[in-house]
Each structure stands twice: as structure tokens, then as C-alpha cells.
Image 1 (tube, rainbow, N blue to C red):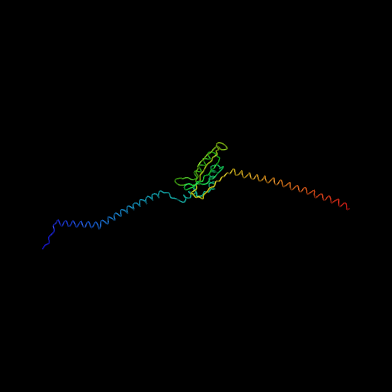
Image 2 (tube, one colour):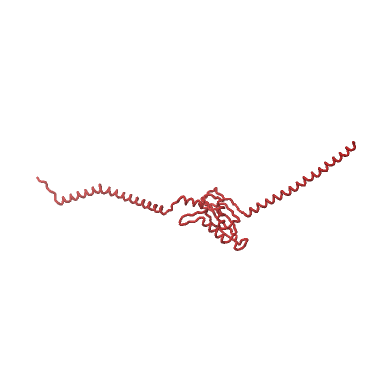
Length: 257
């Protein structure tokens, strides 16, 4: 008895169903897991791209940033030290004044004032000179610290002129008497740093020293003069007393003979 063949349409339907089953099974077994892995890889790639972009941005900033060298730190410390150094301030200003052809009549350092990240030391100076000497002094003071071609140049301490006023000097025009308020700077805001007021008056100090010396000499001279007559008087009185006994002894010997 021979087997009955299925109709061709049924065979086609079975073949199509088998193909669909294989395709669906292949999708769930092979394609879908790989698709999930592909999604995870895409997320990782995006994260890596973000990190690369951030790294490139940091690299670009590092290229544009200036390198801090030891020489730069040394110049910065010279321009703004972390100690008040009142003697150094006086010497620096006196040196600039000498180069400008002027000399200070007085110089007074005031107490330091703390600001954000640094301190300010005000200095009052007074001098007499002509206008060109004043201009030269301000020019030299300004050029102690400067930025040249993008680099810090420090030939001394950093000073700024807060206020300036001048009037006609004792020798009249073109001589002027200038009064300046100059600020020096200290790095940091340490509470232990203090700059008590100090006044330097060279002309007044010299006169005061000479006056006591003259007074002392005058006081000693009268004391010596008074002692000399006192010594002479006892000597004169003793001489007559010794002579009188000698004269009395001579008659006594004559009477005996």
C-alpha cells in the first residue's frame, strides 16, 4: 500500500513554517544576544569618547598654561616677600631716591593692613627737589617690578604710590616739597607680622646729637673752676701758721745765754 503524498500547497506551508521557526529560533538564540552586546558596546564607546574629549580639553589647557619655573618663583618672592623686612624697605627706597638725585627729609613706616591674600605696609616719605627728580623717582619706583614680553621682571620690591602731593619748597620754584604715601606688599596674611611706626629724620637727629654734647661740656667746666680756688685757700692759710712758731723760738734761746 503506497503512502499518499501531501498536497503541494501543504508542503509549501510546512516548509515556510519550518523556515519561520528556524529564523525565530536563530534570532532569539544568535541575533538578540549579540544585539544586546552591541548596545552595551555602543554605550561603552560613547563613554570612552567622552573621556577622550575631556582628556583632549585638559591637554589643550595644559599646553596654553605657562610653566612655573624656579626662576619665576624667585622673582615673585623678590617682588612680594612673605616677611615685612622694614630695613629692606628703607634701603630700597633710599637707593631709588639716591639714583634719582634726591634725599628724604623723613620716612615713616606704618602698621601693616591685611587684605585678601596679602598685606599692605603704608610708608610716608617727604623730600625736597625739583619736578624732574620727582618724575624720575616715580619712574624708577614703577620699573622695579614689571612684566616684559609676558615674563615677570623683578629688580626689587613691589611698590605702588597711593597718594602724592607737593608744594613750593623753601628755595621756591622750581624746588618743590613732595609728600608721598607709598605702599609695600607682603605675601600672605599672617597674624604675627607687624610693622610698628618708625620715623627716620636724618637732619633732625644730627642736630639733637650735637646739642647734648655742648651742654655736657659746659656743665663740667664750672665744676673744675670752683674746685681750684678751694684748694688754693687752705695752702695760703697754712704758710703763716708755720712761720709764727719759728719766730717765737729764737728769742727763747737768746735769753738763756
